[in-house]
Length: 81
Length: 408
Image (cartoon, rainbow over the protein chains, first blue to last red):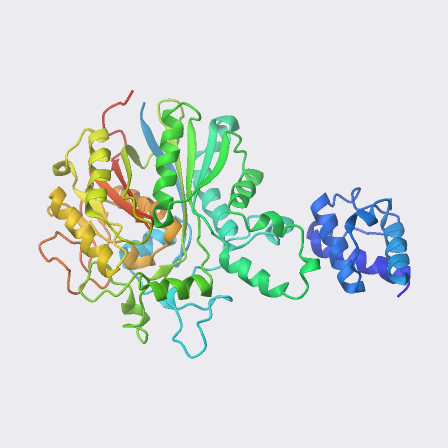
């Protein structure tokens, strides 16, 4: 699965977790915090994506990405590794 | 200091809101059937559990919060919203408003469903599960949606939880901590495991009436065979009427009593019940002779009803009108004390007493029961009993608006 596909999954999970974002465009350049996704919701989104990717890594290893695209790249690298 | 009840919100098997509650209270439609909510399936080959389930609460919460809370919290927000608006609490300083949620282990059905859903994939449990199944999450949700900033806590007292929430709310006002305190009897969302355990214990009925749900709930009747569960929730806005101007006043809280028997299990005890009533009456400046209406705890368990009748005799309450709200809506467990106070106040307002369903052969015919038909009666002073497992005995004395002495 490439990083673009992972970004799509992340965006779908954000929409599931925060129904209030319906109708709003979400791109890889957006950060979850800027979209108003709170910290617990961010963890929920990331866990749900990890499950779909079959990944099991500590959350602490996922700090750093500044937007959805960077998070998708990091998850892609982890799943490839 | 005068303390009164200035807002009521209710949810029960008859629907959401006071209109549905009041109509069912006096018309007593048959609300009982087999429990069908996911997570309440009986053991294989066993008869289904009998009880009352409520319709889906109105969608008050934003979808983002609604998807992360269970039925108990959705019902709590619904009843709180109705009571809040009626009492006009938007005009009260949020720091002078408190919330006491009555009940514990409120979300066991939803938690069991979640345990099943994440069995074998524990690594992916949503972090929100770390707080969403705690009873205090109901406080958090309520205080997020409504400006309650005095305090928000839960109290547990088994089936007396709703009544103890009222007592704690009154104490918080008496102590000066707040001017308004909402007592909320929370919906105790039972799972199949809970239901099976209560059935095994012999506290919950239905074996005798497995084929006729409408007859199963029969408190104070010679043929009762245990309590029958009913989903319920109620919010009561209790306020210091000399400080807070309320558009509406249902009645006064004149006295409260709570005593413990020192027993762990379900055993009821007349002595503790009478002591609780004695303290509530003394606070109200009344004797039992001044009580003209009793709303019983009246679970419909064989031992519970017998012992409660003994309490009526000890206090010589036989001349007061007595009925059993659980006969209509089932036993709301943690919510029952609160929703039954709501029933008392609505009868006070209507000048009528609600019927007692299925009271075909009263355990004691000498008691002045309200039978199958509603009766006209202007309540002056009501006594409300609530008891819980673990030896909890409570009594409340409620009076018509403005009644009672002014306590210090």
